Length: 243
Image (cartoon, rainbow, N blue to C red; front, side):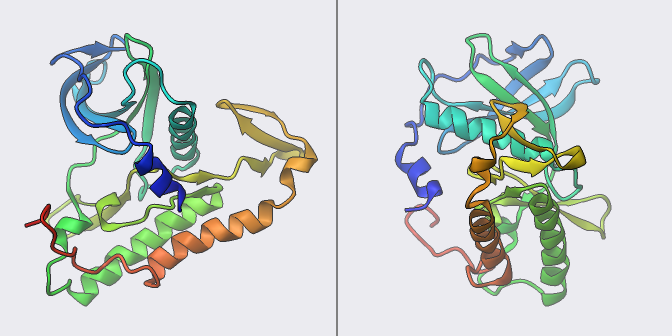
């Protein structure tokens, strides 16, 4: 069972309490509506009142009263993953905070566009367009891997397509909810540091043992999704839910 499957098994049932319409978080973000719900997070469209009501996306843990430590850990890893990457092909993290009842939330850029899934028909896609998209996906994955971040859930639903004009189409990778983050990296002057609870701390050398093998496995998983061994361009199979 993959970690993604484990997250689904532990998913909190849908139907939890949503924030009231027009709720203001961190005295800055005006919540407009819920736009998505996953295994352990709820995603809202909001307006940044300090930036001329600019639209942003806010993700918050679902659990209403006593968050499971597992979900807290995965949520913190997603924040660390996105904070590490600065690339136009990866959705940007803008801010973090807590709701009035103490749940952590993550503020991300709003991506206006469609998912790759919605663009894949039963007849497939035009080859030149596929090449253009996959080149950008590869560049975004490479930038993430360079920072020790492994998406682990690359699929059409997590690839957004947006346009800056009528002709230019750009990719944005989203949803790093089950990403693997390499907690060890080399700092300046060869010092070994690691991320712990969102802060940089000294990392015992023993923690590095086995790191190379783990990194290779995580990299291979993303690459298999990218190169077609785990195909992402197949049309979605018809089920009762998709009819």
